[in-house]
Image (cartoon, rainbow, N blue to C red; front, side, top):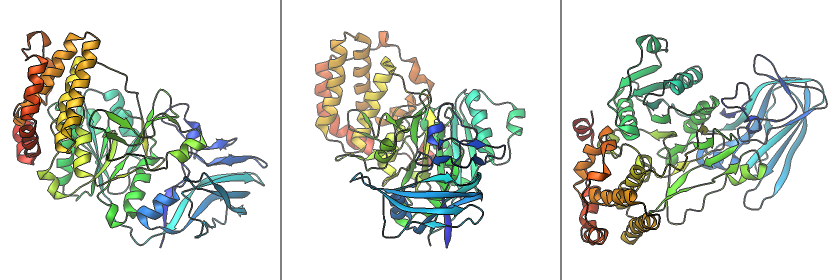
Length: 490
């Protein structure tokens, strides 16, 4: 049967200012119903971040065939479809036809033209109104997808309530929102103003790992038999159609892709055309952002964003600002690491995700991550990075270079506090993994560097070399089942 794969997205009420080029380019008007009005002689271009069609990915991930475009509205226009090949850089006109919008005819892409990306333009012959449309295809794999949108929040109500209001009206059928509140209790009036599709859970402040783990557990134990947990930050800005786009992708996936994580890209809120990353990987020393700083207002950048990133021997991970995780009951014995902050999403993706699904248009806007070079940040980077390395089988020499390189930098900067926290991170890594549970709450921020007693660095590194293998075994065998989480966190 022919199904809607990807609906067109009009600018409407943009979540952030200055993002119009991600929707449609050209001169057009819009009415109160969100339709586009196009005077005779004017043209608009849908070669944009939200409206290009990733043909190769849709064909590969879903097996969709007989793909085509349908436009709804009134008036007559010329419609030109163009195919783009990423590897060669070749673009080719596929169709150029006169289109009567009242007919809602499907403009099929020739099956022999399997380009990576398909885009289109509309040139009005008469005054036109475009009320909607989308990309359709034939697929035999459609299934029910029921997602719990898990939002972990800590005293950020100024972001949380606007985000809830923007998404509750566009939730796909059978989806719900789970708000995990780890801060000040919400007012009963506020919670009662939300529909039944929004559920609230109070949780101790255990950071991202604690909050999102609570959401995953609640979704797994809910009566609704959820298929996915969509993990989402509270302080993002979201194009509401992204939820439907994510749903349509998950609905049509081939069985071999149904355990993949759907990873949302991050676009900078302060510069809403610039992408921070679309996927990332951990090198064993630092995070490497895929497709970093691309200007999504440029055609070339949009095509580059469709490519397979060069990862070498590394594996991508999905950040939890927007990440759809397939659910299965075995996850109750294999929950996220209790990192509190910094690296929980990395370790969990490397462990649970066989791959990532990345698609233009599935993304969020987020405030940029400023370089907060605090001593505590260095501590978390080293401690959690070493744990990620041993659980992901990163070679020992990489971990040794990771520690020594950060120490040398602090030495050159004459940063005594930074050196103390790096030594503390190595000491805590070599301690029993069970002590992680003691450091997965606000107690983490009570560390006072002036009272910390540490070995000198050479002695500590010798101990690190001697006990690394033992620590590796202990961390790989750490219990992450639901019972352990409840005893130590809730």
